[in-house]
Image 1 (cartoon, one colour):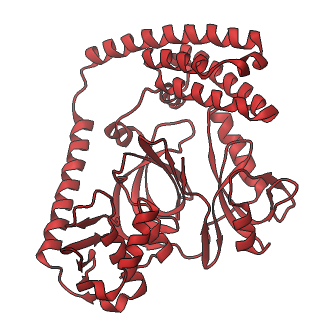
Image 2 (cartoon, one colour):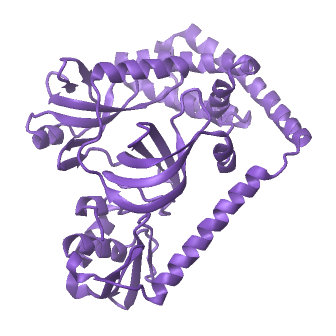
Image 3 (cartoon, helix red, strand yellow):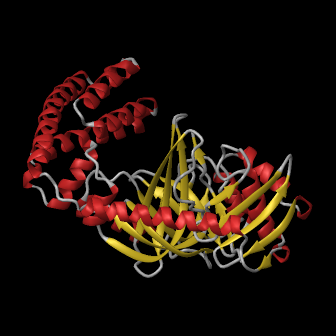
Length: 440
């Protein structure tokens, strides 16, 4: 009926309070009319009122009649946890009308969404109007790049020591100018550069690399007509010229596979939450990065849980180094991974990263799945593989990983940015340890 663990269910919770409240409701006395079918599980929870709760087994989307603004609500979490702890309480059978009607509405909504995407992809483009818009934006961006180049030249002429003495407004003002020039992607990169200033000598070295990347990007945009089409798409995306979903599906690689969820990170800036989810295909071996955005307490469109598997067709953004993807269509039931993901040595992972970086110089991060690595905490935390190669770690949960692994080899999933590993999860079958959560 339901393959995920209690820890995976709690990973769906929007916050710690919801997880705790859901755990309290995972008791048989709180529920009645529990049941499941091939498509869903359901139950009625007695609280201040009788709440009807149902969960789709395909994508773990939940619906409850309670007034909560959190998704999933505590009743949905409680129902899932009860299914994990006491599956015998759920009777197999036909779903009641309030469950089937919800499933039918979801299916109809999904069908309409796919039809809209297909219609948008097939809709003839007014090339004259589109050309005028693109030319106008190109002129605005070009003016912004001229200003940015002059600003970068002044910055380097004065030296990084002087840059450290500048107030935050020094960087923010230039970033705002890039937004006004319709190059928001460059503005984001510039703000990331300013964050390097407080990181000592290592931060200064990385700042120089980042500034060099900015300069390379401005020159690449000026020569965009001479670039390979896929790399030109990357340059446009780096500047903030985005593609909509229909364009991605029409132009990108479509890959259908059984995808394992190997890492989940949520970054919260108090206004918009950004979720990074790393997937690995069972047959294709491809890795994919799914980005999801949610405002305030809204839920992410897709429920993706660490250590789970989904059957889906992904559409990859056109790129010289395809990485980011969207979920075009899901099928089947969300399941649980069997064993650890396929790993590689540090040497193999580093060689793969170098190859991809050569094709896309602005590659920000790559997923490393390292096989049989041991954590060495001193003098600086790192992991060492069976060949004796080591990579340094950043982040917080090194002591937790050391205690959990007991010093034995594990399969480590981490993000590599060219400088250090940021651990996301570790596997020592049948156990899995989450090492990344919400980053404020």
